[in-house]
Length: 101
Image (tube, rainbow, N blue to C red):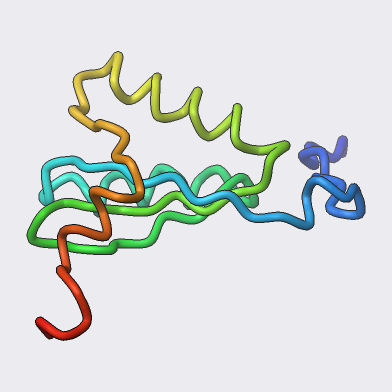
């Protein structure tokens, strides 16, 4: 029986010792769907919910996997998922300053 193992990502490269965080906003009802898609693509990135009411998530990945992650997101957009990238400064503004908490 032939093994159908997927190629392993080489994290020994210096670039892959760094994590990249990209923030996105989508309909809060689609967060679970997006998370399940990324779970199917083992080891390319992790989706974390930052604000479930606002539909803000963060994609955590490495430099070598970022292009793959962005292709997955673009493919989901082509299928009709409305997801937009957010700038970090706008994400910070969702929670206000620490004195307001």
